[in-house]
Length: 608
Image (cartoon, rainbow, N blue to C red):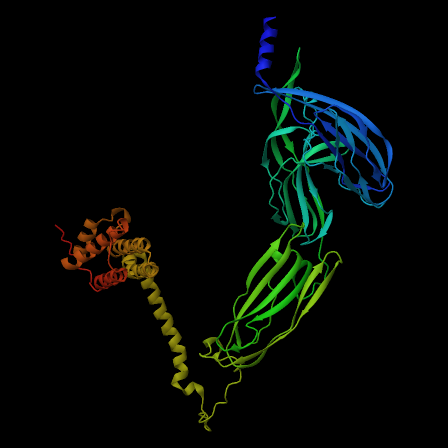
């Protein structure tokens, strides 16, 4: 008795969550002529009576209405909630293709008559492929999960209750033809967490992903079972090779919500329980047809339906040494984003730059459509009458299964004289025939033996002498390169000059941090190479001692150390540094030149 009293007090202190009654209709979107289909009218959270069926055109009533009832309640976080439903199911047969209009049905709830909204179903001609079983639902209708009373925590979640499916919009396509891949979740359970662990791979495809936010907001009937569905990922695929291409399966960790249900004197009470399961999607294979051979010479990989226009900017008033643009616009639907720039033949007297491509596309229709603008910039080098040659643009139409070629008309240009001179690249152009040489050609009437000429023997002697000189030089180089210390000292100035050049680039951009960092690299590196001091032993004291031993006078030593101090100060306190960076560069170059002009002082070793 004490336990019953405590439960009664607890129930009185909780808030019973109820919902307003709703009356909705569910029916398939498409039906093939001659097939049967269900139309279900669902009354949620209410007790109905006096059901009035709808008026239906284009279909014949076979059976109904059949009425079913369900009730459930749950207790979550101190709040109790309940849900009841009545379903009135009508079975119809599609009698003729076209539009089937389902009028409103009505039912009396608490003395008031509620009615559903009218709905239209498309009836396809007999012999059409089986349409998608996606179900239309009235806006605002509740999510049709199964009754929580049947989703007990001890019930196993089978592969028919929750699965991920990869669907392809077409079973076979040509290379570069778009195919839409949809990865969809089907579930009879509520889902609290969904985590992909291995994503499907799309080897052999170029991918254009369609942005979306997955949500369980649609109901579909598959193999006679009703599911809540969510599109996890949808993308447009462009196959890059022929043959059978397979999209591998993905792995997912899913947390589903089940219920622990127990009975009390006040009814059934449900408690939500999460269960973690692992789900693997199917694999999808699509057959890719190769593009027919032979391909037109003007084919650049476009697959779809396209049109082409061209334009000149400016349209008239061309002058030498002034830039102009030949605009090539490709519009249509297909793999427009991956079309290569067509080859355009410009006059030899034009300086032509690499084309610039600007793509404007969208993928809302399951394939990319829009336009790609290709700008060819050119500069005429000579005045006169010129012509941009006529060309062709070819693409493959997968619906027709053949190549289509669009002729592109030639463009005539009149170029007037402008200010400037032709570039060096074009000064000698179109001058393949040179003037015939005139004057004294050095012809002689007398002849002699070539072996009697000392120059003949000199040609034998010179290569021999050159070979001897080359061997001597090679031996000298080997000897010098063996002396690593000497080689570093010899190349110290060249390495420093390259670093100073890099520092000059930072100075021209006004980058003080980069400038002084590069200056320190140049100065420390030069001192290390010139004086053969290992990097680990570099210090100002060591540098000063080695410079003195080298034979550098005290003033030049002080200037060198002072320059390093200045650069270090500027690098680590740039806000306090001042002065012209170019002046620092000139100072460093002068110090290095003066150090290079000093010959190393010979050291005398005294043996005792």
